[in-house]
Image (cartoon, rainbow, N blue to C red; front, side):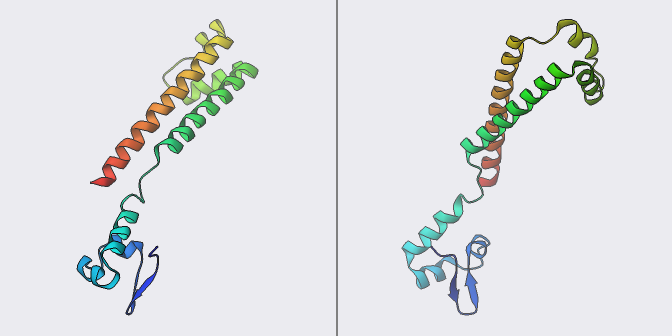
Length: 135
């Protein structure tokens, strides 16, 4: 590991190496070629987002928010309708929510849909982000 190696008065660290403060030929002479290759490999992927944790966190958050929302609507339907009318201006929820009600099957289906949507959105974001930082 090369977190800190002193080169005269300058200290070599990952940030300095990423900014290419030091010439690679100089580094090869000081540390040897194998050590410089390790340095390059260790700094190449340090800013990428890992796919699996991001997908799990996003879909889990979406699912938890959906369950919270379903509980809110189940316990306080009138206040939830007012809240959603205020949040989504331009849409009128009062007629549809009170008339149809909310069943367990529609809640379960909505939960699955929200988790799938969270998975797709997280996958898309991580893929685009990781591709963008490579360039």
